[in-house]
Amino acid sequence: MDWSRLDIAAYRVSVKRAVRAFARSALVVGAIALGCGIGVRSVPLVAIGLAVMAACTWNLARTSVAGLVVQGCTLILSGAFTCFAGWWYGGMSSTNAGKAVIPGLMQIVMGIRHLVHYRTARRVVNDPEAIARPETIVRELSKRDAKTDENVVEFGTHVVHPHRSRVGLYAEGAVALLEHQVVRLERRTDIWIEPRGTTALGRSIKVEVRLGDVQLSASMPEAHFQRFERWKTGASPSQSLAA
Image (tube, rainbow, N blue to C red):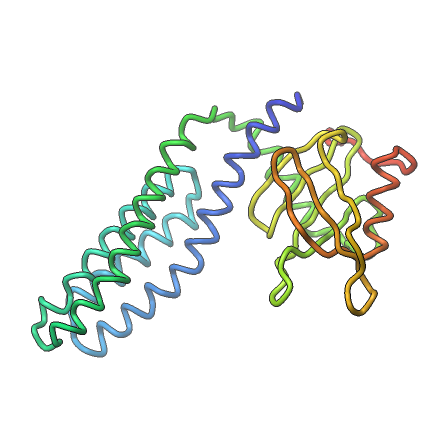
């Protein structure tokens, strides 16, 4: 399949993975809201909990770019409820009711961002055949053993709580899964990993990762850096994306 088609499709794959990840976390929040609503016998809170859980369940069952609209509308709805909950119930002081406005507005802003993101995502060509291929590649890449697979490298992008990213090295180029969510396809000439020193324990090295227009500071096992170098120079064989 043509590389440019796969590259364009990777953006929609990233959006779908983001929708799925958000739905998983928000489902827990919805369940908590539902439980609290039942506990205090709040019909509006129960309704919000059910709405959030329904939206998340839908996005998990039928994940698509349109899920951004579902998430955006649900966030705006729950944010509006949070803003006005204090005044609706009358048992909250004006100071506490005013404080409740802040998280409510944050939810509304987040919801609007989801809707704006959807406006961008929907302009990307919807090519189901091309989308299916990166999704399959990413699923396989996630399951491969990075300790022994010579065509897989990993790096961490945070110090305290490392977010692991994985790169599959193929004959046509690299497929990067950044923090288990963002999918990027890069030609061999457009991806660089350069050493920037060693870590305190000496088990890995600090590196600068460049994927096209994206630049990241990360840490990487030295063995994985050597794998990447061999692939970059063509010294090691790698399978084709078409395989």
